[in-house]
Amino acid sequence: MNIAPNTVEAVSVVGPGRVALVSGGNRGIGLAVCEALARSGTRVYLGCRVPEEGAAAIARRGIAGATPLALQLTDPGSIEAAIARIAGESAGLDALVNNAGVSRGIRDAPGTEPMTKAREAFEVNFFGAWQLIQHALPLMRGRTGAHIVNVSSGHGCVAKVQGNNLGYRGSKAALNMLTLAFAHELAGTGIRINAMTPGWARTRLGGIGAPRTPEQGADTILWLLQGGGGHGGFYKDREPFPW
Image (cartoon, rainbow, N blue to C red; front, side):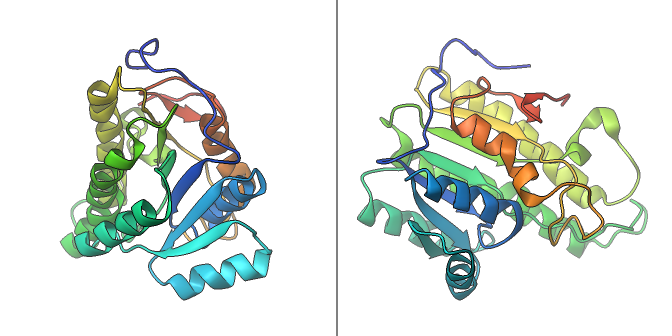
């Protein structure tokens, strides 16, 4: 399901003159997105809790055109400061990738999962992404084809509910609802928003046994930013995915 697909033009926001912010950009899928965007000439802000780790990742991979940016999604002040820095250094923001996420209750059943784990998942995966969108939108208005991509999960699909890790699953389902709500608000503004699931990738969250590389997990994100998809959709492997 797409929301008002004909009211927002799908154009690429990748290339010289474009500016992107990727949360959780210092490793895994986020780093793969940052590397690909930087190669295209996009100015990339690599958001991470510890900017020194971002700088180390940039040096290790030899990424030119990426800037480490302190960004702690559980700290509203950090979000405000990150957006203020982008506003001070760039003319605007073309792409926001809400990639940062946590999963704490992997083996916990709903009856025993500690609320501390569930709340942490919601603070980062849902509330953090929501606040980042709110603060980023003023920089995105008026930018041709500006695009927000929320990195969700198949575990947030209500058609595929399983019993464990409810905090994580619930936070990703909430992120999907957030995507749809903003799709309604942004229809006709020229700003697109979509959600995607990268599948099971070899990241710190996914583990070393996952079948996909971070680059494979990043592919649909990059496809969306290059003009693929519609507005208010949920995608996997460049195809619509059930909510």
